[in-house]
Image 1 (tube, one colour):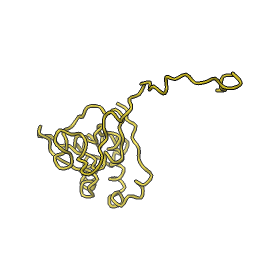
Image 2 (cartoon, rainbow, N blue to C red):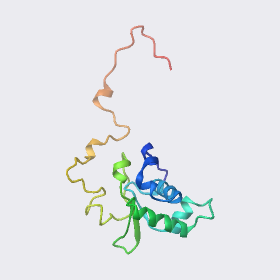
Image 3 (cartoon, one colour):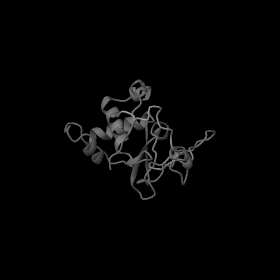
Length: 160
């Protein structure tokens, strides 16, 4: 499934990202495109290498393992084991930087260190949480959009 993700301009001035190698930084940006709508992904360096580095044969699973180790040490990702015994990772700051309008179901269990039980978002102690009804679904007409508007004074359609 195609995903549109954003990278904020300040990412290139991030001290956390500056603390890791350029290949780890590229792996991090690649993880943003591969993670599910909750910032989670399977922690499989060989699969990640195949998805992100397929045209760079010199950077395989061993290089990606090193990237992931650097990213975890810089607290940019968290690596954890799910209840199913499989390894997962998640982007720690996902919900601060990625705004998903209609998130799909999760493909991975929540991180036991950063996310509350039964929640797909990290706990927001002291912060106002995003409510589901505050997210506008696509294709829904609002009362304001249903009102007919007065024609232009010269009664000509607007140029397109």
